[in-house]
Amino acid sequence: MVPVNKQSHLRPLATINQVNKCISILKSKPKIKRSMWSRRAQEYEAKISSGKIYELAEVVRDLNKGDDLMIDQSYSERQLFEKAYDRLLTEFQIVMGTNLEDTQKKLDKALKRNLEKQIQKAVEAKAPSEDLPEENLEAE
Image (cartoon, rainbow, N blue to C red):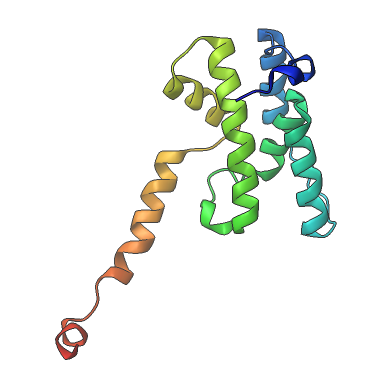
């Protein structure tokens, strides 16, 4: 829901040129600061809330872990990444006029992410821990 009296503060949708510049931002090298996480988290949150699409792209780029499992991130880091990623994904989808899956593939390609590999790695990592010895189950 958007408050009617606040609509003047909304920016128009990005143009296709802005989307292309965002994709080049996503492909560039992440700029990871060495400051404390709480300070960086505040900066990322401010960029996400700013409404500027280039700043949103910077947050997604900086918090992206590529093919590494999302499990390697802290909860708050993952939350910030997903929030920025979802906002960027939604706007890209509208501007490019493609379906969600195609837009996500384009975004993941720019970020060098391979979600299918991530899911497979997560399943493989989980599998051994699920094989509990039967004696322990019978003792309960």
